Length: 303
Image (cartoon, rainbow, N blue to C red; front, side):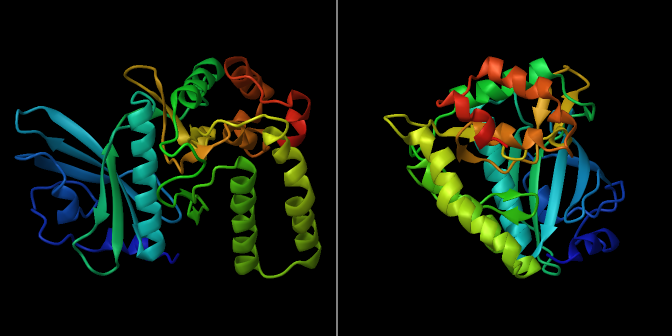
């Protein structure tokens, strides 16, 4: 993906009224998704990203009440996949557990043709970026995993979602072992295409596919065992959480969801670049949602 998305901030909006305050050029097709007779007061840059631009929009509804929205934009074909995927991921999360994420409103394409720009619009919630409380975060994530139900009974998702800007292999499959193999193989192929060949790494990756996954992940579905497809956020680290200033509730955002084994959600917590890599988060989650059998191999399959 190119950096053309940042050029949006230097161009005047098409057909925008001069009465809209702020420093973000709001597109007509975004405004069209607000309720009838909404007055747009301002659109301001909000947050930062290497591959998207974001804004906070303040409006007055027809009854005179204030409302705020959060807007995210990305460009070109890759931007379309990102914005579509995030909208449907957040919609699935909201429909499953409406108190866990800001309400998604719409996704679409700017009226402006150049650069080709896609957007995701949702409710704005004023949140702090403090590291989330382990008890409250883990209880809510475990509840999501318990109450969610795959619409097909399989692992995957009905559209392609992204982890950051990286598209994920989310094609439906009834076997978690097969889904996970396809998922990881897709990541390996993208790495090869982006960074070129590395013989030693490819040899290790081949053994992971042929030996490690069938042994450790396959054991979850061996000897009569089965794995429930759970809806996961799929990019859950402290940077994608916030605590509401108004209610104190923890919210999740920037989702790349699909239906997976629940352990897929928390494996990333062990990475040292996360502040939630503290053992307290994993142990607290496991108190709310226990280990899958064979429990003696939990540590090996989640390294």
